Image: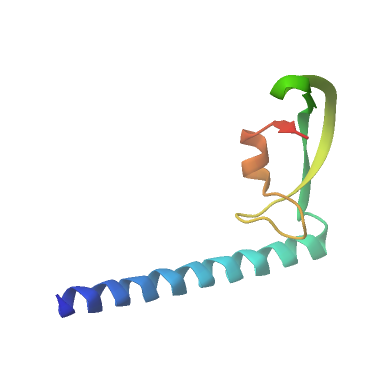
Length: 94
């Protein structure tokens, strides 16, 4: 049992280190792209507004389309979502 816990602990450490290295690398590449002016892109999304009504009901209103700025990276950076994620989720609710 002790050996299994040691293996799990080592695996968790390796996964954590790999994630940190991936995030730092992604951040560095994004910063280089941003300095060159190619770090951001925009995606057209459809916006909807959800309004609470009486009796626990909801009203959904279409607000139109809008261009949303996104980061060309694996992870969100500088307050902008990642472009690959935003292109797959083009409907936004407020």
